[in-house]
Length: 166
Ligand code: ZN
Image 1: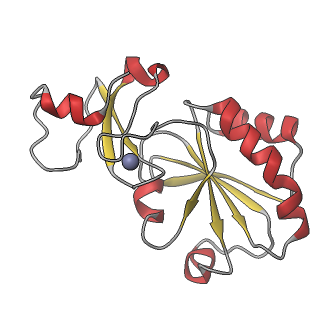
Image 2 (image 1 turned 180 degrees about the vertical axis):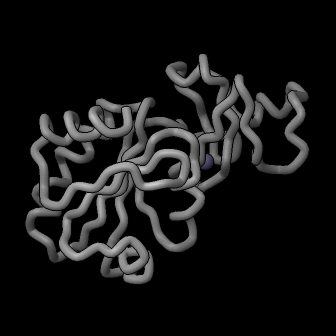
């Protein structure tokens, strides 16, 4: 185990309190719990990195919640990110939730899965032109690379994510 804080403590040149620049050896990974950006050595992604700030596993494979305070930061992260645009009243969204959580576990640490409540965050849903839910959007390096409307079963979720971002 290691943490982003440990990396900073070894004096690898992160000047600010948060990592902002990646390089050939490190990936920037935004913590799904506290939104701190951590530098993780690319060859250590599978080693159970913990967040330098909150000390929780960085890539634990849980679908985490996004909102206006952290959406753009996570979308800009360097690992592929899939966002489930959903709402609490949406039956198909609730039906897909366990499969989505399982997909998050199976695809960790290669891909991160997150959720955005479109009722709570209509501005973000509007920005992406979400017309029906659930809608899945896959992001790479800050840009949308694929979109899927309608709930998927676990095998089809994994297949869709693998085909588009993994
Ligand atoms: Zn954290």
